[in-house]
Amino acid sequence: MKILKVISVFAAVCILSAFTVSTTTTLASDGYKVGDIATDFRLKNIDGKMVSLADYDDAKGFIVIFTCNTCPYAVKYEDRIIDLDKKYASKGYPVIAIMPNDTDMKPGDNLEAMKARAASKGFTFPYLIDKDQKIYPQYGATKTPHVYILQKTDKGNEVKYIGAIDDNYKDAAAVNTKYVENAVDALLDGNSITETKTRAIGCSIKTKKSN
Image (cartoon, rainbow, N blue to C red; front, side, top):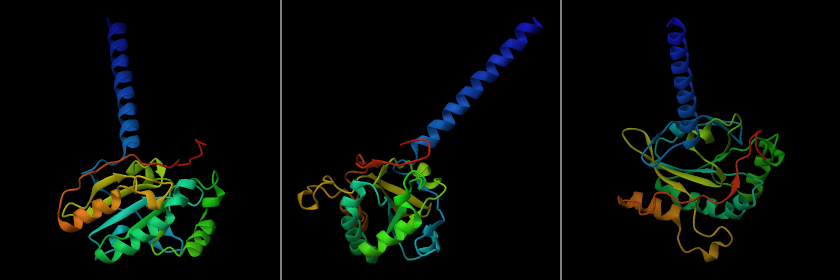
């Protein structure tokens, strides 16, 4: 009887442990959903200063974009990202760009390369490095570029949109639907966002365990 009891207890512990690991993994990989409150971060900008969302007292929200130097998709969207910041920063929705790749895997995305790219393109927004790769998993970002529109609320920065910038990464002139612009315009007008989630198109975020 004692042996059976010990076995039963051991089995229960194993099941509970497996459930806990599985649940933790699922939560970590899922990231934010529309309606979630995003926690703030503090990341190094290309100018060496640490930047957090709390620094923007006058912002109504943020266009957080995970992007990089080396992904062809991200490069295609650079001018459009610059245009988003020029159009919406003054209206209260600045672009906050975050480079999520592991720089050992992608040396072309290291801080010096980020500085050079930002200077050559004339970035008007912060270009932060997620050096320890702790922020992009919180958001659930999987691609570069991957966009998260946040709106300041009494509860915190609420996620209002997740996905792509628009529906044509190849050619800005051939875009039919500007997802990010439509979403921010709706928020500014006090309306509901028609499409709150779209599929991000881009390169996979690089970690030491992936290629």
